[in-house]
Image (tube, rainbow, N blue to C red; front, side, top):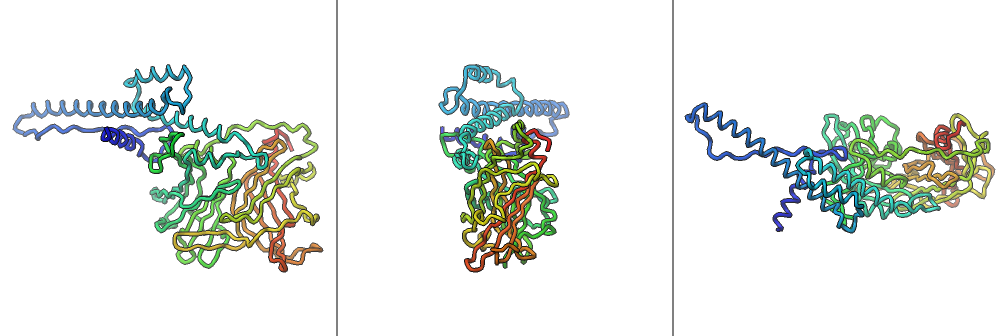
Length: 471
């Protein structure tokens, strides 16, 4: 009995070991030849050889048909076991029960790979439905799902990067370290066996989840998995881009969205890769795409603005600045608004902390720096950190969310404010949906940074799309 189960699992595994194909696409079953006993002597004559050739072709066809049938029966067994109406974990209605019964009676009528595709499609739908229930409760404080961490655990979700050489060769690396923050996940890869940077063309960031998954059990770590592409990055001209920061050992470069690449200073080769993933739609993006196509968000239905002349109002911002589990800033700002007259150069200006109002100014706690590590060294790059932004609209819906490395730059001239006697610094971030500008002052006496100005610039195109307006 044990041998039979082992053989079945071996066959299941071999059927899932094809290269990373889009979800629902199965590998074609292989052809298996039969041995025909001792070799046929030439002296038997041409007629005998022709007869033997016909028999051999017949055996090959029979072998292929047998292989297809065996594969089909294996996958219908996997399918019926996983989605049996008798299983308490899966709620199946009477229509589905009838469909399963009829399908079991027509195994031989299905094309090769049908049941494998059916299993994967059904598994995806089941995972999607289960995760939707887990992610349903929303935290009014952040506007994000309350149980994101539970969803990550239940789905068996992990992340990999696929490094692609210009020659077409690929290297897949499992994440080494992971930290879950208040509104984001930081995932890190490092090791000794990186390919040469000069040979690389792109980097794919993918979520991976187990194909065989029972919600009542812990997912298999070494079993077959499907991939969901989150983002693709170009590495061809990495060193030609602007350096983000450095210390005595490494230089770091930032690639949008949210990817940080560390290079050794001496060799200019990869030291580590760090991905910063915001919670907003993270589980869906990491599980419901394919190996080649990212998950596409559902179409947005505009939330009609009843008074466009009044401008934006009732917004809420939650902002974190952190690194290595240490938070330098964690703040929530409510009742933010902007007027129609604040629209300029395609952006609407949303003032969060005013330069003129001393009571709004906030300190950064601790010595700001971005922590990094490899299997040999570790360090901290001064003045850099991870910024998480979660902006909610007046209905409490996430309007703009991101998690990205940021770095404080020295301003060319000191602040001319009456109460500011220190060096001025700034932090800038920009993507297709908006911009963030932060102005800070270094207070020498207390050795801390103070945020004296924080402004969001929201893309008018995004606002019009979101509300159906025509600003």
